[in-house]
Image (cartoon, rainbow, N blue to C red; front, side, top):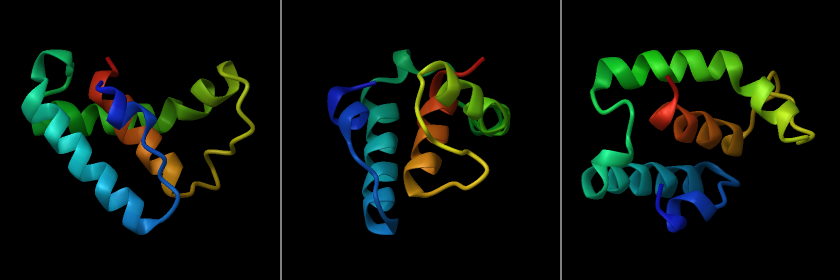
Length: 85
């Protein structure tokens, strides 16, 4: 994941739109760093990571409740689905 994408802060709908554009560019520019390159694989990982994202937050000791998501939670899920197995 490139540094721009990794460090991009999603705070609202407009920044989430920009994040999705960066994510798409990351796939086009750096596909070897994507575990889930096809739409079916990505969607499967998206569902699985959505289920497991609270564990990530807990392990990282982040005070985030995935059951009350905001735009940054959605961005975290999409970033996770990029590499989640």
